[in-house]
Image 1 (cartoon, rainbow, N blue to C red):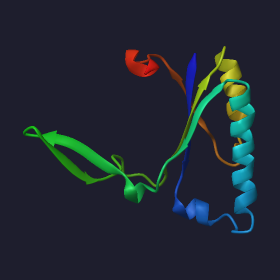
Image 2: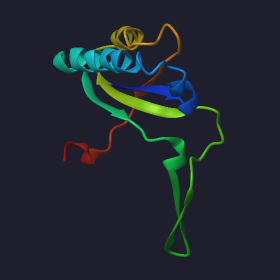
Image 3: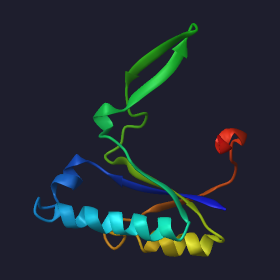
Length: 121
């Protein structure tokens, strides 16, 4: 079964990490990514741009209408997401708990219930 992991943050949070420590913190996440990519359980890891770059796209009268986003007014926003393919929720929970910084900030774990038929493109 597939699971989605979500990490939240904001520029204030990233800026609170001392510059000299930032490369080591990124290396921890890269090591986690490699570890679970090699087991075949991590299908993808994606970091998102700052919320100031997010857009809302609608269609009005058949024409696209693009405005600044994100959709929700929130202090923190989705910073990264990961797609896992695990044999059980317990295994997904173990992998999520192994993610760097879970001792400081929680990681959301969402079971993926349905998959679009076009995903095998």
